[in-house]
Amino acid sequence: MFEEKPLNRENPENGAPDHQEDRRFFLKQSVALAGLTFAPIAFSQACDDDEVPVGNAEKVKLTLTVNGTKKRLTIDPRVTLLDLLREKSGLTGTKKGCDFGQCGACTVHVDGQRVLSCLTFAVMQHGRKVTTIEGLANGEQLHPMQEAFIKHDGFQCGYCTPGQIMSAVSCIREGCANSEIEIQEYMSGNLCRCGAYPNIVNAIMEVKTNGQKV
Image 1 (cartoon, helix red, strand yellow):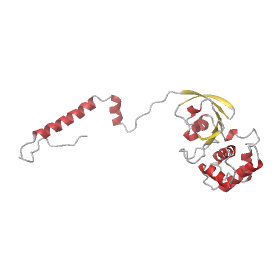
Image 2 (cartoon, one colour):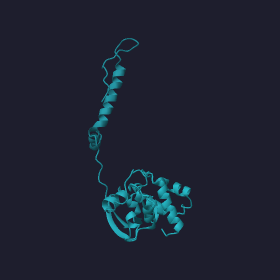
Image 3 (cartoon, helix red, strand yellow):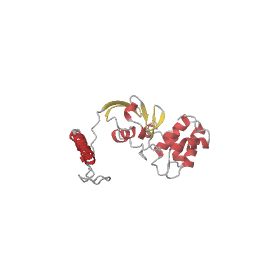
Image 4 (cartoon, helix red, strand yellow):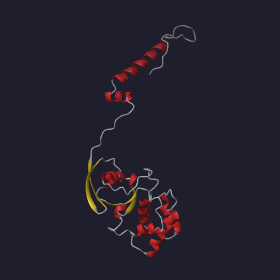
């Protein structure tokens, strides 16, 4: 822990033992050891352990309306909306992709606005309405955007499709579907590994052109 030094060193000027240097070294070590003696036990243990356990946060109560159903939940305040939907509510249609808000696979609607659920704390959505891909259809009747994606083969492998569809609906609702370039710019936050972008743009254009309510 401490640098080892000889107790007696010679003064470079006269070759005699340097008692002042030894005294300074002794005082430094004494102060350091005294600090460790009075350090909190938890701190001392933390220095010995490789991993420091993080305590459980106090649970909080939360009310959400998810796909038209009101839910009262008790959750860890650190839980994201994505994990709440997938792991506590069983709505696995919303996908966990990058978990850093970069791929868009986790896109859902909160009070009608698209959000990245992996970057959204669930506790901050208290009292709000959340819509996932499972809640977009009207019973057995698919949403017009879902039908358009099927028609234009815009889903390909399917993993990013729920997030793509949720963003596509918002694209029209927010008036950003007036041209292919506008749609491409709006949808650029949703990544498709399979390269279904042209088909996705065609699906959005068709729904917009038909004037269907989304």
